Image 1: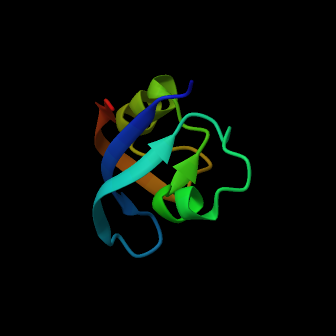
Image 2: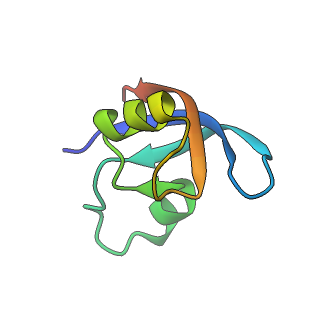
Image 3: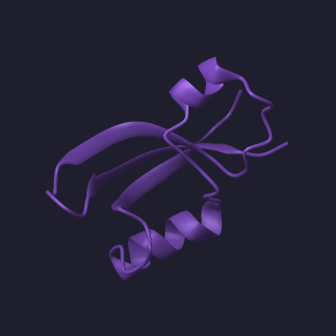
Length: 73
């Protein structure tokens, strides 16, 4: 089962900030459109999130993560 994270950050293009966007490690949900509406981004694990913070967004993402926390269900 993949983990979910709540992230804060900003978009690189216009520096607009966001809070509490939900990301998930893997897209392991089969065509659940409601889930897709709630998930901001798939494919980010804790290592990726830490890398984005440490490098200030020097990566291929369109946004910079400034903080995150794992969501426990």
